[in-house]
Image 1 (spheres, rainbow, N blue to C red):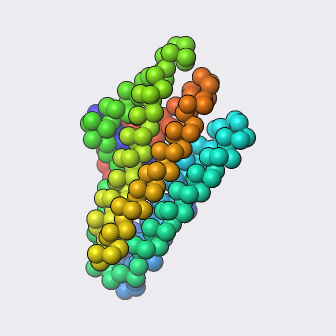
Image 2: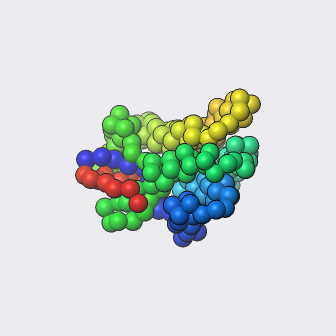
Length: 229
């Protein structure tokens, strides 16, 4: 059995995937870069929505919620800045590696045949995440190992950032200056994600911890066999 990280795309993102796939598959005589760029930006936006933005809504305390919104804004700006630097008017042949990475390595159909945006987790990463979530299933919840759960969330976030930033940018044709900007931007995004968890987890009551675990748990998909959409 394999474990995937993945979220359900919005209708807008699904439509962008289908449109770009049709255009590139049919080898239409138009520029591909606007479709690749729009697809990349929408995936980035929805990844942040799923990992951070939607999380804000499960926080009951208004003061904590506002603090999280500020952290989320920082991550969103760092991501937008990075994409604006990296995504340009590339030639069609230079678009294909990044498009196929998104299409073939960043999407899959789950056990309900629903398209998800995500990727295969290696065994060590999947094991660390599963152990952390298992630590929140204790009864009573006060016995939950918050440190283990926090590690699981940090491992999951790092895996997502590594896939969608580090591995994706390896498919882009970039000059030295642009490529040097990637680890700097990723460090800023990493810092924002870690700050969000460090600020949120220690303050959570038992019921809040349960809500947080239930929020993230659906992003893990366990499948015996899998096929690409």
